[in-house]
Length: 250
Image (cartoon, rainbow, N blue to C red; front, side, top):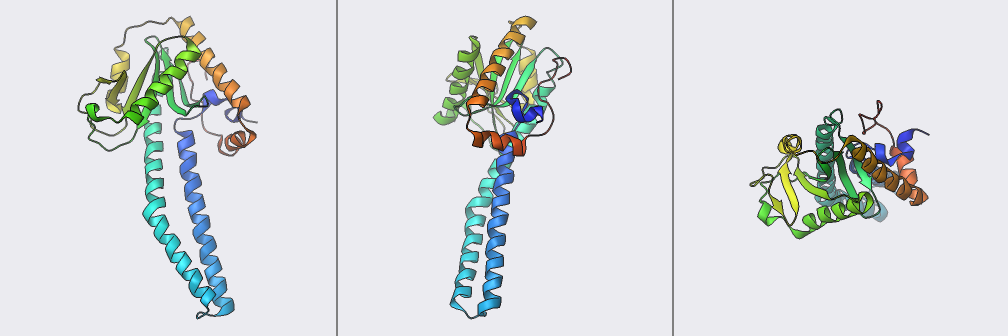
């Protein structure tokens, strides 16, 4: 079994979000296809004036309306979110040759952490948002901030080190980049690497490795405890390249 199917520390950025998009698109096509085939068969078997045929046509049209009105916008939002995570992941991967380690798409049982970054300045959790903006930091809603704070607390419990939570907007204009709101720093993706590179060093290479191993162990333990159904998702969608580099060629 490929390592990506069993090692949650080597997931690709946006892997879960991208898989969700593909699953939604596939289900939509299957539903429409099944209704179209059923309608055609009823028309051929019972005639075009049959009540069953007319009813199936109405059901097909209603399904198309629901999909156009509700499903497609949802798929578009999920696709935009997956793209945002992938873009930010590509930025973070540029740091892995400079003493940083990054884990993408991490799950510890209480939601998904888009990126966990461990480097000389410390540990950062990064929640990627793909809202088009403009974004006013003072008006960020509580749910978004609570999500970032919960991620911080989770990783702090695992590592025993203070963690800085970041909300990174992949494509929005932010009125006060680098500002904090309720302990969460907010910035656009274009400023992320510059911000990180200016942070003072606090962790040695050995401390970075030790904290990374603590996070990796926690992820692996959660993965082993996860239901078989969740693991089957990894078998179907596992694949891609390793996302933690700078560790002996990984």
